[in-house]
Length: 402
Image (cartoon, rainbow, N blue to C red; front, side, top):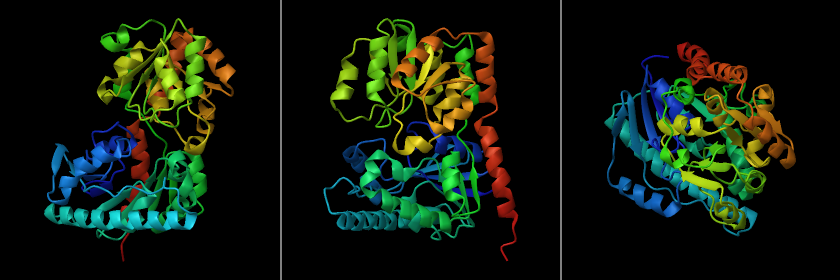
């Protein structure tokens, strides 16, 4: 795929926590132009600050060239969703659909104006959310891709409108030309809806995260000064985290530091407060992606401490190969998609087993084990993932439209 224009309707800001959308688009831009539209509200951020930040976009358009061939355009503020209102189901669904339609109407027209300003014709439309179903066919696109990176309907906050999102998702799957999923579970569900469905799991920026094994990589002060050994987590700290499990880990290893690196979006609660008050638990906040190898270098064990419910049951965690590329010993809850990697990570079925496997991992510094983990990561780079996507997209783009 060369010389194309990709119209990416992103689920998050370009400079937010660096995840699959930014990883893929930054690589596509090596040979193509990417127009990256940021959402009217980044879901990782509070509603009111996001509304204030994006409100001026109703009256002006910002086009920022952030890298060669990558243009980032913030869109106007979105109306907030009504999914948490205590309404009868029929009323809740109707109001949600109304909000989705209004937000789409505003955003579509804004994007159309931006495309005129940039003289974009026949782009490839790249969608990531069933909320964007009305975008299909609005931009003269030659191809529509749906990147299903998580089972959106199964996000815990979406439980009141799960069936509605599932219906939108099914309809979007029927309308698009190709679907990429990040897990086999997502692929199994969609392949009967659209035969052009392919599983392309999350990958890793290997060269970046492997720096954790480089002797010259420095360790930041905020983690370097903590008591060793260090048991750590890097990523989004949200409702997918098993807070009871983490508290039990901190209690079981009082002579270790439990370190959580990433944006903390948990909105209070007794479990969250209890964890924050524990003397050997340290929330270090969000760090830039280029600094994450420095934090991983300081960790003796890396955790994937997720609750086995909701979207986690079908998720392929982005951090898996990042941890592996850093050579870290890994302990995870029993996520189905991770079972294929039980030769390089420790998977726990129970809380007691999770705590026990951390003890094993704390002593797993064998050169052979580190090499095996690194080898798996090297086989799962984002460059390899993009090659898989190109293998699907190139034949579709070469088809005679007539």
